[in-house]
Length: 216
Image (cartoon, rainbow, N blue to C red; front, side):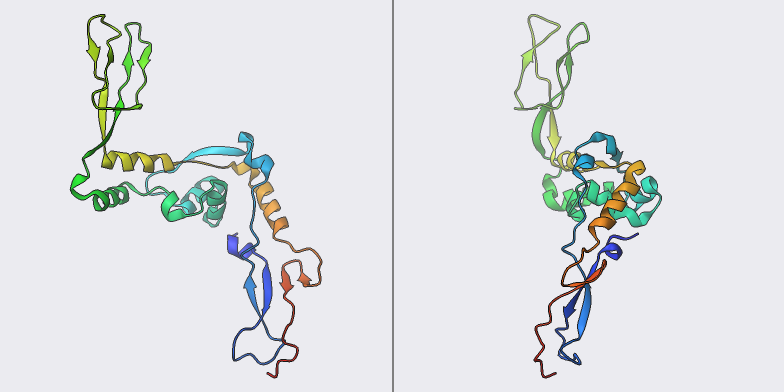
């Protein structure tokens, strides 16, 4: 089931100059009819699962892997909260390298910032966690010695920075397969029209005819 196939339709008065009369309509998909993840699903970890996107995996491949159908790629994107696939979906390793090379040029391996490395005391307890952004000359007392200091700092290059951001995008949270049918059922209900003056069927509505006096 593809997303756009499930969208209901609207009959609009034909804007074409070649229309045969005032009662001629064109059918278009109602793009304003949006599916929404139920709040009780969205706000509960019970219904969601963490998924790591492998290098080179596309949304349709994730859908095939998790739900057994590549046509459900829109479920992956929607429940993961991804709107702009180009910017929010992880690039491949080659793509992130090419992107970084183009962006930074000769500064690709230039240090962007510094972070702490892990330091433990003599008992093996973590004295300083890794990954804290610090200045290059950051120092701490040596936990294993009362007379010395340490400079537990490592540099992060521009390329490493972009790679880390891309790696973060690989960890997405999406709907568990066991709740897929419930989600699709809700989606079809939302996509169904209720009775109104424009009602044609539960899948089609028609706009008001404003051309009753159209000479064509």
